[in-house]
Length: 168
Image (tube, rainbow, N blue to C red; front, side, top):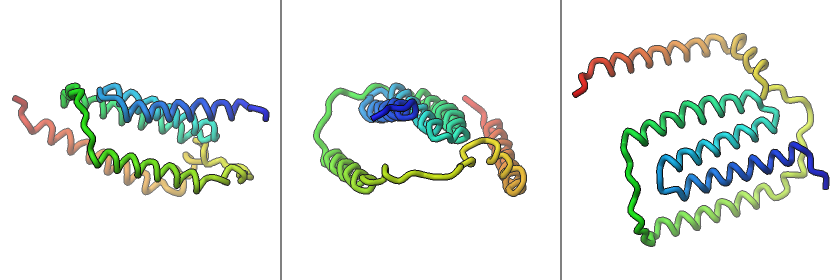
């Protein structure tokens, strides 16, 4: 079986994504868990690039790996979460969550068992930036501008609320 560059990149990004998810689950330090989540977000962006969905990849990096993770890290550092004690006990919730997780993985393997035989045909240009920009600036210009005005009003409201409180 011939390994193409796309296949190799898929496996590299898939393994990195799984490693980031496992690192997120098993890290006790919240900052390291957040960094594992960033690794997961970047691997998802790489998978989007391998599917020729450049716009989704850019949005994944800018919005999730950039803005959302900066917000998560600020919250973690503002809460000043300390390292949890090393004592772990058996909880029935953990056992139930583990069993449900295994059931979910088994179900997904059952559902997607023969899906690799199907090939997508045709040209898909909706993963690129130009067609999405064209749709936003022609057919969906009014809703796009309405969302911009609502977000601007929310930003101004947040600034007014933040300035009205006196900090101790």
